[in-house]
Image (tube, rainbow, N blue to C red; front, top):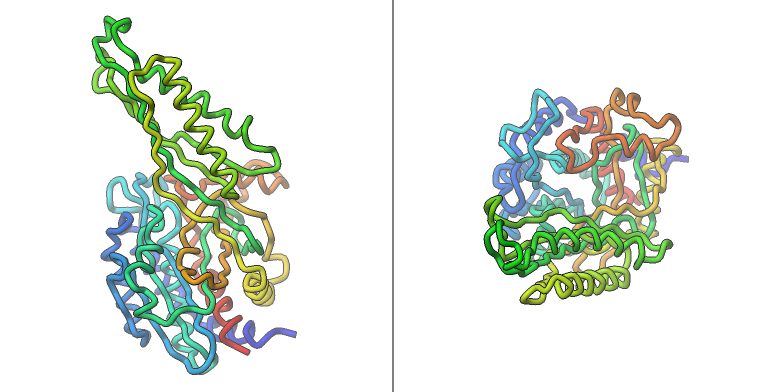
Length: 413
């Protein structure tokens, strides 16, 4: 027997204005905006919310937008999408590719905003079918890690009702038509680390009078690769990436400093702390061995928290997704090493559910090598943050339906 929430979701999304939503998606994709600068995107979203009848607030935590739709007694459900793009030069060749050099929606946030706009419209049009309060949030600066916290710090919950439950979703590679759910830990924590190696600069022809920080940094990058392989237990999951190394101004000048930027991905605070301690120890040891005149500076930068779904909340949403889309469409892939700041919107520890929507065009998925090995084929696809990341337009309607059905799993009894 189909639940009332599933039946209502199918009714409210039966006649989605898909061409209009596709046009919105193309427009957002053409006009990407970096973290904290999402002025055009926010204005477009706010305009749509006001037109649909939401009490709309702008400028929360910078460019954040929130809309409130009251529908009588019942829970407060918050739906969230992020708005920002990445400093990536697009290489998709799409007719609606980014018109801003060096900036691209390479993580699907334009699609997230399209989905949320469509869901907000559908739920407003069908407000007589559910009971409670709906809060929709367009969040800035997810990619820089501070957007959710900034909205909360700027009084988000003094301006909108505090949610009883929070829901969100993310576009990911994979054959169109899957809705991965994980009860519990679904996304990892991340921590950025900067290391400054201090040497003694001089002329490239007289290295014996210098302490070359570039050589020390090179040893350090190599040695850091042992942190995961030799200091993290095989049963634990962790990633250490050296994403940037900078030094020097000319080929014949030995510089005085070199800078290394790292990114850590962990699934527990204990592993994170062990990795940071190892990084400090290795940096100090390499600099001591090289005779550096000063100890290295090791600074912890931005971080993202773990994303840990409330099991019962995720089960409720996953169940309605199975009813709406089919039993086989909901899978549990286990935790991902990617990170999100969505959980910071649960400022009072409210339960939340976060899930994925697969978005790879059929022709690209069919051409991916790997045969029946799903993971091998996934590894061959353009991933989030790739200059070739291009979700298929066929997911516009289903992605609206996932949000609508997720919200109705709490708003319909």
